[in-house]
Amino acid sequence: MTTTFTGFHQDDFNVFAIEGLDQRMEAIQNQIRPKLTYLGEHFASQFSLATGDEFFFHVAKHARRTVNPPKDTWVAWANDKRGYKKHPHFQIGLWGTHLFVWYAVIYESPWKVEIGGRMEQQLKHIQSLVPDHYHWSPDHMKPESTSQLELGEAGLRNLVTRLQNVKKAELLCGITIDRNDPVLQDKDALLARLTETFDVLTRLYVLNRG
Image (cartoon, rainbow, N blue to C red; front, top):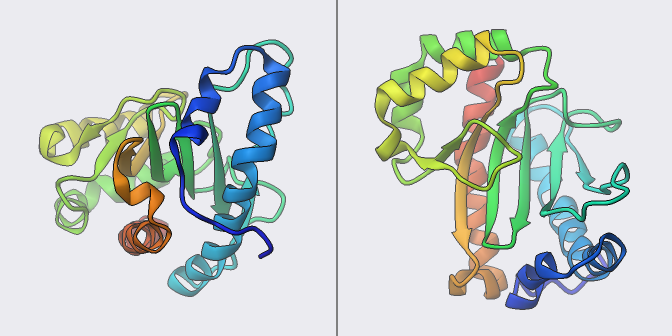
């Protein structure tokens, strides 16, 4: 790890206000991607130890974009060195407003029905495993999410049912950290928060794996 990681600062979030695909991509590549690569290397072994699966990290390249600049960027971990999208995986990334930390099952996954079924059977256990201030999201393409406390059992059941029955359905669980939260600029405090979060999310991953 050659990058000196210092956390995330306002300049990192301001990248998403830069106009133009090439200009924003250059800032992402030079400013944010080294930090995501650092985190990718830092946490890969934690996931491997916690789950018993070998994990690999993948930093978003946004290679298919030809016009619209990306509104967010991320690093993802999965137990497949070729890619992560079809697998249950973990993410850390940035929107212009906040940092997100997710356990994610997105629409490309061929195991959504099985995972949703297991989650439905263990819904109350999942609610006790996941702290109420954690957030759930039905769409990784949107920055909005809802806390488990606000969602309630009925809302969570709806997300899990939808995962099984709707082709484009997704399910994400984790935390968001506002761009103005001072923890983001404190490397040690941030890494501790991320480690604590992944301790919860890896247990969710193992539970859903069956």
